[in-house]
Amino acid sequence: MATKTYEFERWAVEQIEGARQRIKTELSKVIIGQDDVIEHLIIAVLSGGHCLITGAPGLAKTLLVKSLAQLFHLKFQRIQFTPDLMPADITGTEILQQTDKERRMVFVKGPIFANMILADEINRTPPKTQAALLEAMQEHHVTATGVCHALNEPFYVFATQNPIEMEGTYPLPEAQLDRFMFNVWIDYLPEDQEVDVVRQTTTVEPKPIEQIFSGEDLLRFHDVVRKVPVAEDIVRYAVRIAGASRPGPDNKLDFVNEWVTWGAGLRASQYMVLGAKARALLYGRSHVNFDDIRKLAYPVLRHRVLINYRAEAEGIVVTDLVDRLLTSVKESVMK
Image 1 (cartoon, one colour):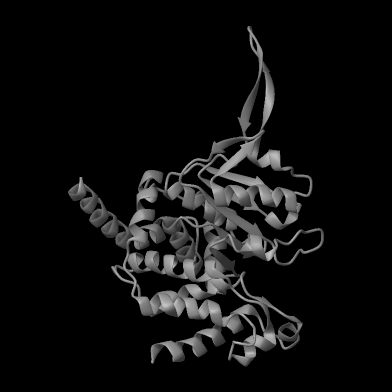
Image 2 (cartoon, rainbow, N blue to C red):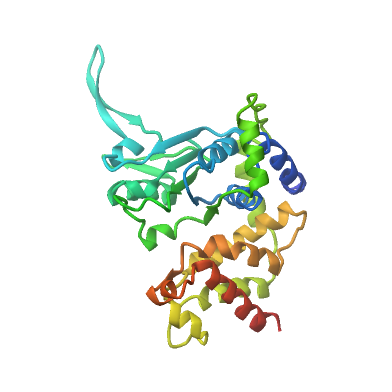
């Protein structure tokens, strides 16, 4: 049994290493550019994490997530979040069913019973409905009339936010944002790539995306990723980056105390290390290095660090703050 387990882990490491180019090739049939975005989403999938995707309308957020589901042969479900959406519209509800012999209550599953959920414009629905989704993300089950119903595995939630339409929205509280592994920003493409998109989408239909792995493979990959070794000084590096983002009398970084209202919590360092393990395998390494942590600090910290009005008045954004954190913490840890 131990031999079979080892053989699968070796196979899994080889498959993950070769998957990066294969995934890029398949997604290039429908998605042009956005290499960093795709890499972050793949890392989240291999790690078993959820993602918040922020970008303007028309940047292929839905197409990207749907294409990922096709790559891994996962059941995909898109839920459009609206102000009148109720929790039961997501999780499901019990209905009275009439049979020849009796009447009984039957649970009808909602759209959340899929493998990959696209929660479109999650900030357009009230907090009660948001909470229903976020509970499912954390617990991987939903509760109806006191009965727990397990969700399909693997289970991922990719939630989108529109950054330019804030009227009539319900922004996610920081405690709920913290449940997302990454906040992935999708920006406009360079002109040449945008030309390619227009040319490609106004001619023939793209070729279908071929399946690379199955949902069962992904579940096993989650275990393999967690077994990747990581040195203590690299774990400490991730912890210090997260800790350095928290303002307070013990923080020696003046710019943090000046610009930050609330810093990153424990999940930030956990997700930096877990994501770094998956990234190491993607790049053919069986160990984590400092660069893995640095690359993932941005999607991990974007939604976990709350800047104040002083930073906004000076034109400082969270990315600028992360730049400063990586410069400052790197010098103290790498010595």
